Image (cartoon, rainbow, N blue to C red; front, top):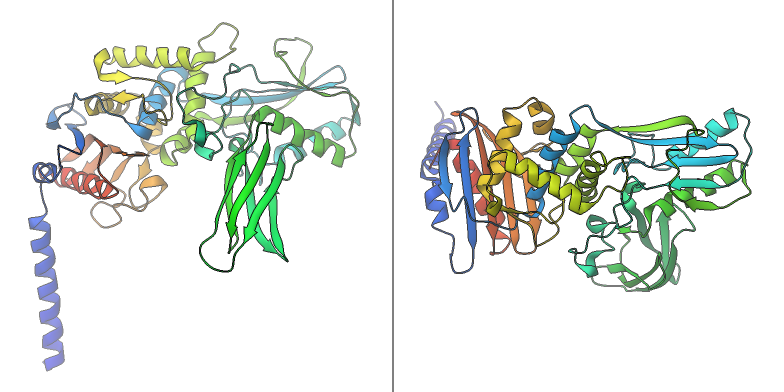
Amino acid sequence: MKKEQINLILFVLIALTAGGAARKETASVSELLRSINPAKEKISVTVVQADTGQTLFSHQSREPMIPASNMKLVVSAAALHYLGAEYAFETRVGLLDSHLVVIGGGDPLLGEPGLHGPSAVSIFEQIAQDLLGQGIKTLDDVILDDTFFDSNRVHPHWPPDQLNRWYACEVSGLNFNRNCVHLTVRRGGKGAIIELDPPTEYVTIVNQVKLVSSGASAVGAYRNKVPNVLTVKGNLNQSTGFDVAIENPAGLFGSLLLEKLAEKGIQVRGKLVQKYIKTDPNIRVFRVFRTPLSEVLNRSNKDSLGLAAEALVKTISAENTQGRINGEWPHGLHLIRRYLLSLGIPEEQFVLKDGSGLSRENRLTSEAIVKVLQDMYQGPCRQIYESSLSQGGVDGTAERYFREPPYKGKIAGKTGFISGVRAFSGICHSPQGDLLFSILTEGGGSEMRSKINDITKAVFDGRW
């Protein structure tokens, strides 16, 4: 055997030995918890055997913590409990005499590319073609009914300075395009060019962007006192783009619909009206846009879309209100509270303020989250619920974690993050069986995410 071959074999053996030693020396859950500074950081951990409910590890498991987006785990479970796995959001389009009527059903994914057509505005093309197919080229009013939810579209506990961000968008009975528009800001001659997608006159742009030749681009959009007038300002070096939440999403839907009708030669002689009309028996529905609950759960848990979670809260309310009207946060959260109590979770272990976890007033214990996970695991909705979770190393918000074997594809959960708060809860398909876990933390910096991931790996390996 040549010297080079011997050296290569020795190198591989050393590497394998080192890797094995590193694996053996990996810290246990208890050891990792000792690295937490109790003066600055809080952590709560609960782990149970999924099939039996036997507690395998517990640390401050009954300490109420800010859950951030782990609140979505509770909301999505409650949605399955109250609505059922076969539920679908419906947006109905019809005619009432010479009026065009659109009846919202709270769908948070209306206009989602791939669900209702290749692009967000595909639905308007379909409506226009339906009308032309019926020989209709003149309409009176276009009536929008968004009363499936109440008129309180902005949660009172959300940070006021973040209401123009995509994750804090308004929640309407008639949502569209995640209730955002996308701004692309690029260089153009002596100034900046701002492009709006979808293009619409519903939003007015005030361009105060300055071009710079060095440094990173720092451009933002800011609201004015006049609704949907956005001042875009900052320094632009390279092109940039971002989503901006708009005000009165039903109005955006209506404006885009009117613009498409005009483009197709359909005249609207009346005006755009928002009012309650859904119970009129003379409405002739000619198209229904449907979105399965499973799709909404995926966006809520896998992608952490706040609008999806908030729409679930209000839908739970609307579907449990006579007349299916005015779904609201207080009533929806009251029903979710009732669901948690039915699982035997003590009332002192939770405070529910919103559905997405953006509110810092929410509280959950890791024990409460695990009981919710166990209810889903042992119930008839296990498959749809688990499928909605982000698969570590595969998809969603946990795609960039747990990429190495044996963890890849074997850990599914919901991440959580707001300032000073990080969380991760879900299921490990581990060698010792399926394990349900919840890890909630407050305090600490960005390194806390690595600590959470290390704890999750230790749970998977059974290193207590």
